[in-house]
Picture 1 (cartoon, rainbow, N blue to C red):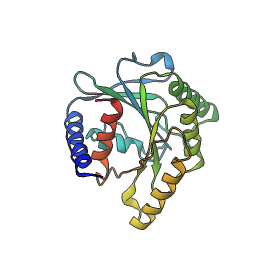
Picture 2 (cartoon, rainbow, N blue to C red):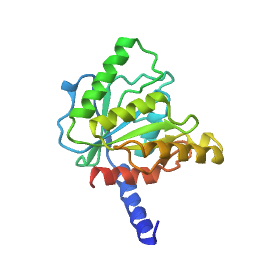
Picture 3 (cartoon, rainbow, N blue to C red):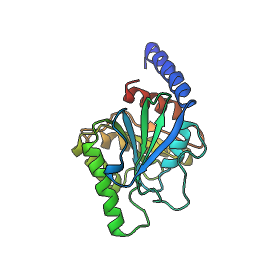
Picture 4 (cartoon, rainbow, N blue to C red):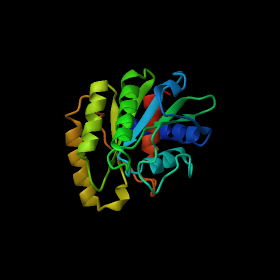
Length: 217
């Protein structure tokens, strides 16, 4: 990264921190597409396995303790949850249903999948998706299924590694390299892998800046 690029990133991070320190509010939960809010601002959606730390990352990004309620039971989120950022609203964050290890009946899981798939393919204001991957485990088949779904929906996405503080630096480096190599095989995947820890605030500033860039702000 050049000095000019570093300065630009630092400025973007400051803008992002200021924006997220202001209004961030829960808007609504949509169990079906007919309940979606009017498509008036850009939306950035978060996807990940049920125990990947999605709620914790949303809380860290927004600087709130419980705007996205973390649950002791993975898979509690069964709807599309919308959060508005900025006053007036600049863009929305969308918490999508977790996948993979949700303790739910097959019919319910299939309903989630249909909701997510239809939202991805038909939401014109969806500008980016984040696919969260646990640093300790790397990509699983369910993550690859999600990435394939995004490829087919032509929705650009960033892969975000979570819980990076939970493993040794050497193991983390191996995971990052493996995920980067696999992401290059996906047409809609962004080449940069974001490495984060919600507990240690690792990579949160850079991710906030990326969200602003994705939202065109």
